Length: 608
Image 1 (cartoon, rainbow, N blue to C red):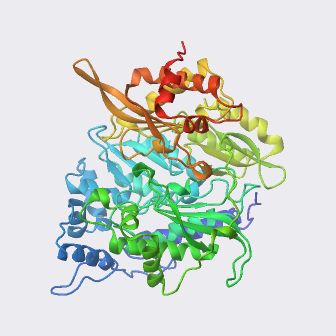
Image 2: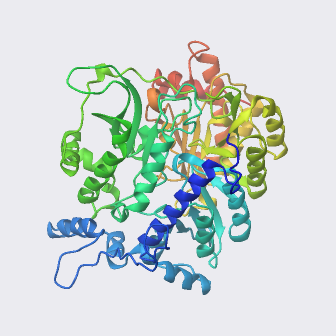
């Protein structure tokens, strides 16, 4: 924690943040072609034009040229651009501010391809699930300050539904934003230093990092500075927008709470490297992995490339540019990085990255890399000591990631009064309050409970993840958050677990809740009941991540949602009855049985 600066009332951290915010505001104005404010990045009145339209009879120019050229190559080869690519070509999504303002003044929502283009501002028109906008924010590395959280709560009350949802990208979402308020929300976010340009659509999503970066006594290296650097690189470079499809980047520092970097298009995994001949690398570095997309049943895989921390962001930018040039713009189902890698192989892709950078990348054999240590699956819940003597963080549990505006204000107050205001969001749909002194920890626990929240969690609730579901997403087949809570309540009343079990409940094939990596995964489905179709799920078992990585196998297809709580409870009781030892986890238990054996074991147990 820092003392206040007597001359201006701001701590050194706040002064640094405000300087970064001023820079970020100018970046945002540059991207839209607006004048830069004098004294904060450019001369007064200077307008930076970033349009990429081709001059009459000429080749495309400006930041969009790399995208136009990729489109042209694919159409020249006989391909047909998908509707989204045509929309991006016909209208620059990042120059739609006036159009959005006029639409809001008229109380209207976007139509047709404008629904897609408006997502560039993080604004999703989510009809028919809700006749309103959802807004994705951006917090690089999941770091947020108490005064920001309080301001976000006030903005949620003024312009949205009075709550936020914590997402699996250590991020926040607003929901129930009426037609008149999208620009008010965006202005309010920028006033709070939250720059969410590119938070949706075919762009690089919130950059994640280890949530305890700088706090974790077991981490190998801090990753939050790299996530922030990557975030600002994206904001500052116009060609980083308008990719063939969305793109995810994560930095893993090797600490107690996993960042799930192996589920990302690009993952940087901290490793210890033994000294070797022929290179200057030893100590802690980052292993480069590519192609994670567990919704398509694939994890990011090592490339053989190992990088120093300062090399990560330039290499990530080159990887993205190769994807921009070569990702499929004629088939949305094949437009992710995984499919370029499947077609080319990793060696060819890395060779193209090296061409982009103008130098070779360092390869290190696996034998020089020390095995990763497994994460602690309960470290994001409850009190834990930090690397700083006398300080602790407190992990707070949420009902499937949702917090009301009053809870947001209450948590902000706890963080600022008892700590130094630092809060970290995690990919497990919860948050941790950092830098709590030993003598204030018990008070913090009581105050969290007073908000209707908890810092304790059963082994089920600690690993419960659910997407928005049919209540707010047009693609979802089931009400995932509601059903996830029913499952956890039912299990908690009947079974006492001594090992953590992750249950991931997702509503559709987009797999926002990453059902394939759960010990138990459920994906929404419509199920026949007589002549009707009711909400239900396909149930899978045995998923994992990191050192336990595995894609879950389907066990029970087409379960009615009403039957899921009892089925899950029966499965968990059968696991407790038949596991090889008290140390065997649920995923390990299921992996040593064939599906038919599991069905027989689970069918024999009923939990009343």
